Length: 492
Ligand code: UN1
Image (cartoon, rainbow, N blue to C red):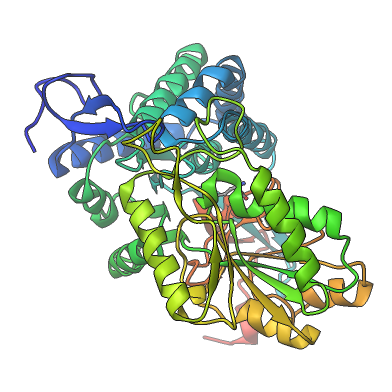
């Protein structure tokens, strides 16, 4: 592709990588793509910034993130709107995504006065042991189109208070929101005053730029969000140079609806989880495992709820906006064809709003009754398709929940305490997230976010996920005048 003679991210009419709005398919910008050498230069600058930043006391680093949270509060509406324009999210969800950024900033500020280590009892007299957490280095962040700003913020807010620099490669589908975030962080940096230059960088680039980030030994941690296919490439490449990865890959999230479930709550919850963000969250509800005795009633209520869902321009009063692009639409249609072939009965799924938006891809969310958990159900199709399967025993429901390759989010609707606890026990759901009486999506930042199996095993956001962004050091200090060896070894 022809390179623009202007800095990356600059708007230009004549050349560069085209950015389209999924709302109407229109061209909204062209951005220059950076070559691998430019990525390497950014990593070098970020590394230099890290060498200074790691010496700044953590609570002072927290002040930068506090200022960033303030800037985000001030510009929440504008950034939320840009998320709608570039990623197609409805206004509420665009705003919600920015709120998630603000929340993680608050969390990280508190964390900046903690970053707790341990003191450990030594077996030797006159010795003490402790565990210390140190800054790690440059953190590479690779993010997907569906959470174009929040996922970066989860990583960046923690990485910055942990004393690291950040190099971010956003999805090629959403470079504008990334540049906006970088500009907003720039305001916080200006207010902060003396942060080292180059602490936070954005790389607008294609696959080659991503590879340059993944392969660079100056990047000890790569936090990558996207498809399992992407993770299968990134993971081994980072491991080959003994780097560390936080992988947030595909989800194929299920909800069990048990005989004792509160159906009113279940229906509302299914609706948000399955059709919210047009089915393009990694936590989207894709599999509904419903007790056979409730199946017909739940399906009838769901169909009624689906029929009322307003689909259209995400900036208007609608609940479902567009799919990101034509490829997403095609993948959805292929999924539905395969589902029919495997015995599924499909309702919905067709293209809508075509007259108003001939170059955009709006769909009616689909409900697919399946005879069992066939191949298509075990595969994550990033679109609003809800597969419905019946179960007879709780064990069978649990087995269906667990027998897919992905392991991100799961939930059960039940008022039976035994089922609720069993679902969250060691022999229950095998997912990173297991909820009771709420849906699979819409996690708060306070908990660790991530999943098992093909979801990649990484944890981001709350709890002690910050430890993934630091290096652990074990310290043993001898304050005696003797030199005892561990394990009682005598060596003289
Ligand atoms: C994602 O879809 O990539 O739980 C992240 C949720 C959000 C994050 C989803 N807090 O739906």
